[in-house]
Amino acid sequence: MPKLSPSFSAFEVTRSIEHPELALAWELLAAQHAANLQRLVDCFLQPVRDVAGRIRVLSGYRPDALNDILPSASKRSRHRTGLAVDFIPDHFDQFALFKLLAQGQIEGAGWDRLTLYTSRGIPNFHVDLRPWEQGPQRGRLYTAQPWQEVTVEDVLALAA
Ligand SMILES: [Zn+2]
Image (cartoon, rainbow, N blue to C red):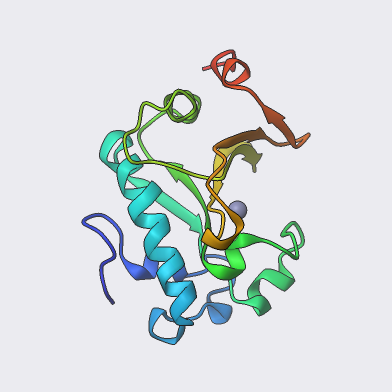
């Protein structure tokens, strides 16, 4: 199983925790989807890992069959093309990390949409990248439940 960066293996961003039988091995990914995952690791996950320590990827690439059976997944989810991951830092406060990212204090970490949402009582992150052909990354920030776009000031006011 190839390593995508010093801290991330291909397995981490292609496995499915809930439906392992529907995951697709790295070797079977479309070239564009593999390139997208590599970009996500290089342009977001590894820079965040360098600051926040160990990161657990909860959901990365989702083949259509996997995305389709997840009740909460958008049909147009960027997970389908390897441009999105859900994750939690293991040893770093989620709100503190959200603030660092919102303030642009993690060098090399860029994104199109970054969401802090709660799942099973735990704050999780969803991050996605915009396909190159659609334009530059917008660096948007969201919170979920309810899903809403928030400002940097809103993020800084979040409880730690
Ligand atoms: Zn997600």
